[in-house]
Image (tube, rainbow, N blue to C red; front, side, top):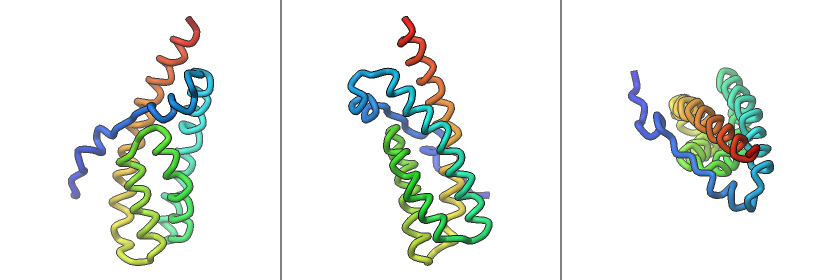
Length: 129
């Protein structure tokens, strides 16, 4: 069994960029978090399905679409893994590398969702004071 990279067990999450563009608007930040939490699992499921079908074009397209959303929440390692997946899928070479990379993204995403839900709750609680 492949050993998972430790950085994917504790992926980084930074809301600095989101805070910057929200300019202190907590409602906007919560809305953006909600969009990420709703859309990202769907995109990941679509990539998973495309991998099963060996539909590399779809893998590349969805990877390209989802990559900025990880950057949005400061999950740079995960964003970089999505970029690798996109590049490999577009090139058609070394396709066997995609599945383990995507598994790391899935593991990291689970942790990111949990962290983001906690941060979202904290922000919502502070916003209601």
